Amino acid sequence: MSRAALLLLADGRFPAGGHAHSGGAEAAVRAGRITGAASLEDFCRGRLHTAGLVSASLAAAAALGADPAALDAAADARTPSAALRAAARRLGRQLIRAARATWPSAELDAVASLFPKGTHQPVVLGLAARSAGLDAHDAAHCSAYESVSGPATAAVRLLSLDPFDATGVLARLAPELDRVADRAREAAARVLTDGVDALPAASAPLLEIGAEAHAAWPVRLFAS
Image 1 (cartoon, rainbow, N blue to C red):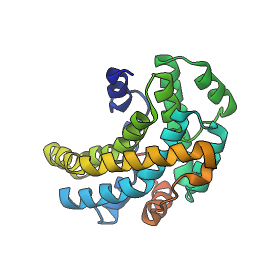
Image 2: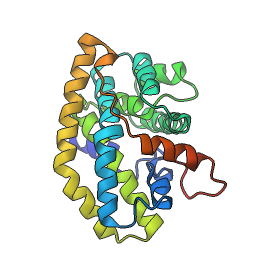
Image 3: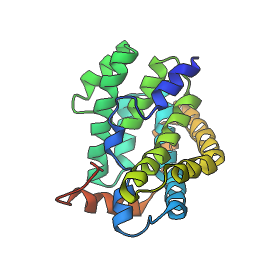
């Protein structure tokens, strides 16, 4: 396994389109649920243990070789918001373009053909990790990190938050991120024997509600 490949895949500068999405932070700022570093940390912690856990489990399962079509259907079932489903597919479409250019593989080509309009981003992330020679734990860590780094970066732009404070939030969440990645890897291993029903289905209703409201705004800084 290549540590450099993991760093590249997790790098916010990897051209996968994540910079255009706030992970629900923009709606939370508008609603007054994120006002500074402390509330950003609360938001990121909640996102990590709900949507982040689900995404990390999907990514880990894909990295282990679970059926991408079944994982995509499982992701749909765990994402009630149509706006979030659409955002996940847009991000997946962009990520698969970047991954195919970076780590070409027949598996990525097949999924791109199967889902020309995009599959869920965590599924693509797991396949990209697999193509890069990474394992399921790497994929889970990368996905879990994305679930909190995106909102933290967005909060810097939305609130003019001190970047040092936002980075401090991520540092304090690191032990929990490791535990979520461990849980995701364990869940993914069960998928190979028990099917996609073994995946967690942790819910985050405010993220879903916020995403639907955000999608209807005529003017917004982020795509989601």
